[in-house]
Length: 326
Ligand code: SAM
Ligand code: SF4
Image (cartoon, rainbow, N blue to C red; front, side, top):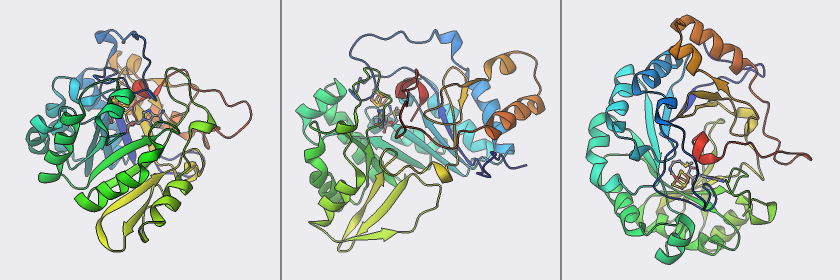
């Protein structure tokens, strides 16, 4: 039975956050202040995550993205990827900050990872340090190069643009895509940051990004699935691709096919859900797979029609991106 919500959207895309820990502290995600991580015993074990994935695959999930926090910091993530592949996931990807990718790229591929998204918010090492509050620019660049030299395809590079911080780098990122053949994705800053500094003025609209790139190079639209988050474009005269992800200025909720599982076992039917659904009591109680599936089906049926960022009275969810898993 496919997993459907009451608006007729079919859920085929699962994001699993395997940890709330991260070795970076990006300004648009985590707080500068130390945060309390969930105690380890509150996080789902690999067996529990695998069981959830198995139940969800039987409900029609086809794409699985492993994320976090930073997924590469949880020991055993390669083995987990291998377990997901063995379950028959058709499209298995990871979103990572890239710091540990160069040294572990081959292990990820051997485990069965199909593709990878690496975050990179600046091409200037000093600015990178200000954004991520780490000095790992060189490691991330090495990670991107290792991924590109490997069989992972496509390699996507994600940049969250924040006005006044890195919006001056749009053209440089586009040039990187042209020179290296990567898929460069520009993501609008969403109100999911721990420090609650988000404001509409800090969002760099996707339309502006497109206009600025088009002023330099001709872009050709690429067909995409309706549920995809990115509007994609090729360059008319070079390799490389750009993707514009505009959840704030051009919401794509109407065709959303995603649900998320947090590292502590909560199912979220929207990034901006005001409540999440705790699967841990079922996983750790004696619920059968059928009961687990029935619970998930019921909650998915109630998936939000869309986020309300642009509506008066919008309230930022209490969970921030590092806990939800992007
Ligand atoms: N640590 C990994 C990474 O950074 O790629 C995976 C987890 S991170 C939460 C997933 C994605 O969410 C990254 O591409 C990150 O840039 C993005 N992200 C985090 N906070 C965001 C925000 N407030 N608005 C938009 N994107 C955000
Ligand atoms: Fe960590 Fe990723 Fe959040 Fe940056 S965006 S703090 S790398 S989880």
